[in-house]
Image (cartoon, rainbow, N blue to C red; front, side, top):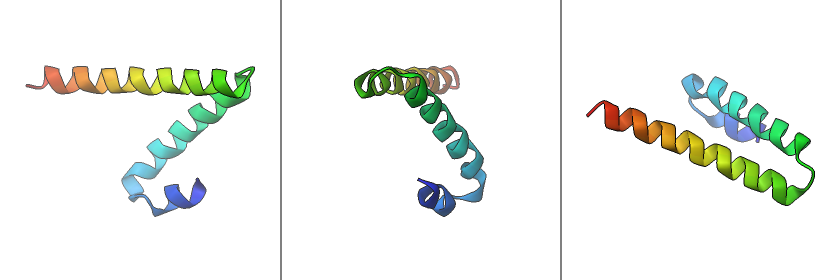
Length: 59
């Protein structure tokens, strides 16, 4: 993962590292791998919903 972040544009690296930290925390706290997968999926859907709302509000 560090290699991918290192290849990203400099202005995106901080956000990508923060996202990886959030994902790692979810994985650490989850009782099972499938529980981690579900929580991460929920987080990504929530983020996508917020992005959609922001884009719709700008139109």
